[in-house]
Image 1 (cartoon, rainbow, N blue to C red):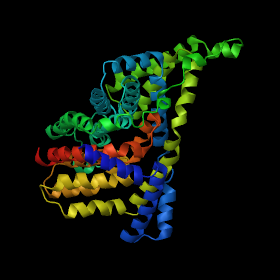
Image 2 (image 1 turned 135 degrees about the vertical axis):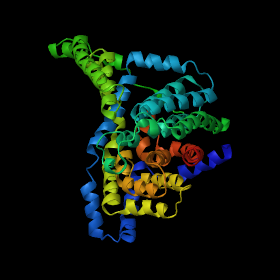
Image 3 (image 1 turned 180 degrees about the horizontal axis):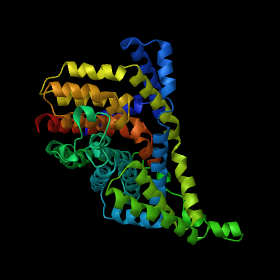
Image 4 (image 1 turned 180 degrees about the vertical axis):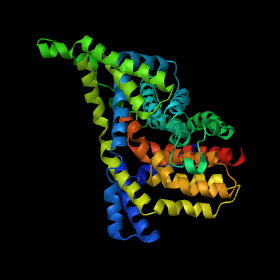
Length: 438
């Protein structure tokens, strides 16, 4: 395992470009594939790209806020102390790898945005406490927990088909989460990943590499408390007034009570951001401390801001040209009643490179996969979850989703992707077993 991991790391360090260059290369690849496979003209491909370029603006802003509000909440005194106390329970590098994987898995199963942020923040705290731990592997282990998100409470595909009047309801009706998230095959996959991923991540630890990439300057954080200035003017007094923060926080808490009373324990990206934001305001105590923390947090959001429009452009080309549908059809054509869930999973994993959005990918693949599954006697619930797990699976080697964690960690994609490749290969085995044989 250690030799395979070392080889994977060497390859990624040598050949994986910066995530921005990665998305540029993907753009060119899809542009050429669209012309060759779908016979679209260069002018048509440029049009598809340009018209889709801004289609992820809402989602991009949500991702920026996940990073910023999660960082702000975690940098509050109460939350910092909590993470530190949790990290103090760990004393050895191997324990740190296992612990951060389990925390990230649990958090991502509850909500994927929550998991991305909490896993990375907890990994940083562990790196401060545990000597001789490979910081790269620690962050990779935190990110590997993201694998379970589409089989959990925030999975966009199972939640979509459980919603009345969803876009495929005329084909499959409404499918409750008892047949998707809580189905035996999905529970098997989730439990298998909870058991195997911590072990796999621990086995990748190499004592010779334990001090790689442990840059203490990355782990040092600005002291928001000390940044508050003495209040002399009326404006400064307002900025340092705990009363204004509490009033604002109470408004947020009131809405949270209303939301959960009305909707039950239903988490989505907006409500997670809302919770992070208003608890951050309350726990920082004063507006000035909160603002200082936000200013510190936004420094890591540049990659998200600039890359998401390019992925939206790729999505535009994949969908409008019919390239995504063509790729899905290839796998349908070689499937039978036994292999179909596996090939649906595999096709979704490949499409995910170019359409890194669970909901967007389902919109593209659903009509093809659902009809093919029905012809082969495969239930719509398993077809949908095969696509969902394929979408989650290749996120391990898709820098798009790692950006928030990398921004918090202060690392680059090539620092962790060698480890993530191994996690992807092992997890793919158990996901396939669950989809095909259970």
